[in-house]
Length: 165
Image 1 (cartoon, helix red, strand yellow):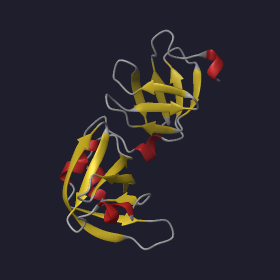
Image 2 (image 1 turned 180 degrees about the horizontal axis):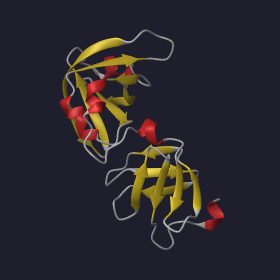
Image 3 (image 1 turned 90 degrees about the vertical axis):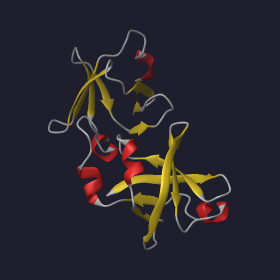
Image 4 (image 1 turned 30 degrees about the vertical axis):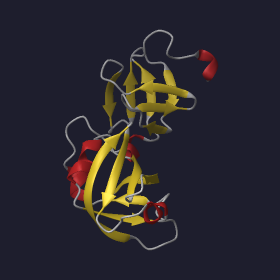
């Protein structure tokens, strides 16, 4: 299952910045093995040495990667993990790929648009609907229904700019 994308090397010891595609980013801390796949190439399996978080991004260290150049070679690679990693997501956590394309509506029924992406930010993830960014926090995101493919939000006044549509 696709869990992230390598965005850049981090430091000189082979760590990689990974954009998480799962909302339960803490699952990266439990990974023992991942597969990296660059577009048009065969995937390669790697043992995970460790994972940590830095400024809202996952930093992934693979056992056989020891230099910045080695990590740089995997920039843009998809990060795949065994399916059971995602199956054991805690309640209220979702795969970003499950959320993309869902309709986003307000509690009073106003259709905001379709979810384009979920962007990782230091404090919390952001729902991206066109140019609109909505913090993915419990006080704003009231429900996520995977069956009806709908996200209901209660944005504070001023968050939605009608000129942005």
